[in-house]
Every structure is written in structure tokens, then in C-alpha cells.
Amino acid sequence: MLKCPLDGTELTKLEKKWHYSRFTVLSYRCEKCQRSIRGYYYHERLAFTIPKNMQSLIRKNVLAYLKGHKGLGSTEQIAEALRISVPEVKNTLKELERGGIVENIHGKK
Image (cartoon, rainbow, N blue to C red):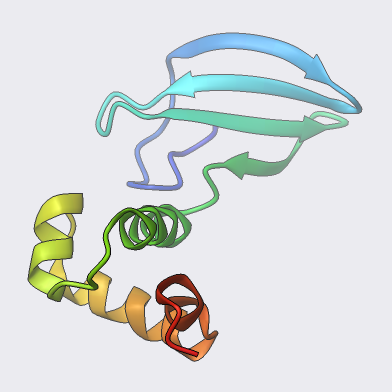
């Protein structure tokens, strides 16, 4: 049985099933976090899920926040706006700074 990659809850509520290229896609709704999770199966074995994990979702949301705001703001402001913890924001910002992504967004390079 597929588990939610974001919170680990077992997914039981199948919403939709379709074929995409070589994959059979099963779309579930997580009852705990209320997000849609897609499982991509190849020859009846799970190949991958979308979203992949919580870190990729946090990174996507922080990037969207940074692109939409002129100033970086404090980590507390970002965490409050995105409803995630401050340590998660700090770790994500460090990762983005190491890759040079934050500088590219704000034109600091």
C-alpha cells in the first residue's frame, strides 16, 4: 500500500486511475494533510510519487515566496507565511544559497 511521502499516512482513498505513457497512475487523497498524491507504477511496481517528499515541497514553496517578494525578509516571516517551521526554512535557504539560487533571484551576483 502506498504511503503519503509528506507525512507517512497510509493512503486508502483512491480518487482516479489512468495511464500515462508506460505508467499506470493512481491518484490518492491523503486524509491527514489533504494533499493529492500520485503514484506512478511501472509493471505493477511503484516507480515514484508526486510530490516526492516534504523537503522538495518546502523548497518549491520557499522559491515561490522568494520570487514573489522583493526583500528576503526574516526566516520567521517566511515560516509564518508558508506555515512551516523556522528550522526548515533556515535549512532550505542554506541549501539554496549554496547553489547560488537566492543570489540569482534577487540579482545579487
